[in-house]
Amino acid sequence: MSTATQSTVRPSTPATPDTARSPINGIDVAALRQTIEAVRAAPAGGQTRWAVDTDWLGGTQSRTRVAGCELGGQWVDRPFEFVTDEPTQLLGTNTAPNPQEYLLGALNACMTVGYVAGASLYGVKLESLRIRSEGSIDLRGFLGISRAVPAGYDKIRYTVHIKGDGTPEQMRKIHELVMATSPNRFNLANPIALEAELVVE
Image (tube, rainbow, N blue to C red; front, side, top):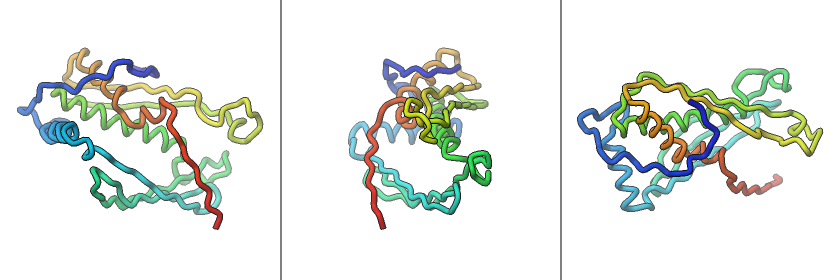
């Protein structure tokens, strides 16, 4: 099952809880539904903020640090970090994934959460879930050789492989739910504002 098309209808959250099977797929369905209802009743509780800091390590390597995030006005400590590099063919040392691989991975990981949560809401037990995303970038754009060539992707293709005890109709509804609600799918499928500020030190 693959798609590059935006869902035109925003599917509603499944209305019938399957409390007898909670938790399912590692998700506490009752807690998920409580969260949905809490945010519906008090939208301020659904406001989130995310931030990372990236430092150059030399060459094409960088380290990105996560300190935490804000969920509903509350700070949550999240002390994580990851390193980025480039293939040797792109002047790197090939010691870590590059920014494009992290970007595609972030898309897949975000949608994975959506499929697992959606399946759990429908009472569908998953056996396996795999998403493959791919895209092509013409280096003439990045290298400044041609302004007519985009610096990034013109299309990202992804295929979802999903297996579980749900019916084909349930799987389709879960798929449509993810297409309508996945934050990173939205971020890549729609223009979003990027505000830049330069600080020379």
